[in-house]
Length: 361
Image (cartoon, rainbow, N blue to C red; front, side):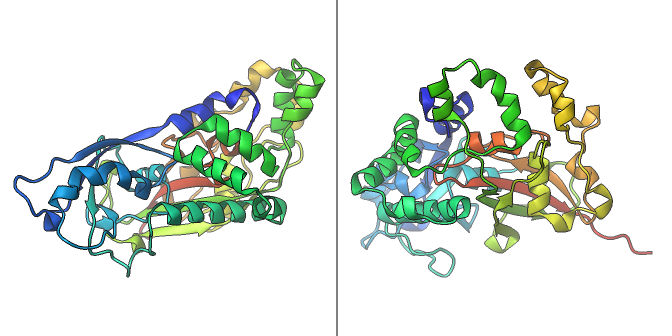
C-alpha cells in the first residue's frame, strides 16, 4: 500500500466501503412484547461482525433472557464465521446484493460445534494479528517485523482497523516493510507517472517486488442447473464452501501477470492443458506504446482476451468478487493486490463455480 498522499483512490474506496445491515434478535431469545425493532447499522467491509456487538447490544438488552452473552450471527440459518471479514461474507453468501443485508443475532446458545470460540473484541484482534503474521511470513519468509512491533504501534495498527482510519493504518503499516508488489510489465507502466516525482519521493514510494502473495480463496459451488445467480440455492452449511489458503507466485519476465494468471495458479485443476497460454501483452509490445495505451492493452473478452468460462473442463466460473467488485480477468494482479487487499495483507477472493455435470451416452 502506498503510504504517500493518504493512499490511492481505490484504497480509499475499499476502506470507506460499508454494507447496510438489518439485524434481528432471534425469536427464541425475545422475552418481551412487542418484539424489539431490528438494528440498522452500516458495517465496514474490512471489519468483523463481533466488533458490532457494543453498538447493537443496547438495542436488545432489555429483551434478552437471563444468562451469559455468547454472541454469534447467522444468515438464513447459517452461523457466520466471525474471523472472516464482513465484506467477504457478504460477497460469498449473497449472489445478488441484498440491501439491507438481513442477519440474525444470538446472545445465547453458541454453536461451538460449528464456530470456533470468540471472546469478543480481543479474539478478533488476535485473529487479525495472527493473520498478519502469516501474511508477513509468506511475503518475506519471516514475521520478525510483526513480532518486533512496539506495543504502541500494535495498538495504533489495531485501532486504525477498528476505526476505519486508512491514513493511520498506512502510517503504522509502512514500518512493517511488507512493501507493494508488481511484475516487470506493471512496474514499467508506472514509470512514466513516477518520473514526475522528485528522486526522493520516487525512492520512498517505489514498489518492493515480492514473488509470493497471501491469498484466501473462497469457492461456492452450485450444482443446480440455473441461468441466474439469484436462483442459486442458499448456503446452509459451511461444507458447501471450499476454502483455499495458498500463496500466489508472481512470474513472467516482461509480461503482465494478470488476475487470470493468479486464479489459474490457485485452481489449476479447473484448467485444461490446451488453454495454458493466456493472451498477455509482451514487454516489446508495451515498449512500442505509451502510457495512454495502458487500459487498451488490458483487452476485454470481446476484443480477444481469454475468459475463464472458455478454459474450464469440469466447471464454469460464474462470478468472481473482490471487495464487492467483479474485476475483469485481464487486470494486472499487482494492481489488484496493492489496492484491494485487506489490512492483514491478505487478498480475499470469492468465486462462484457452476459444476458441469458430465454427459453420459
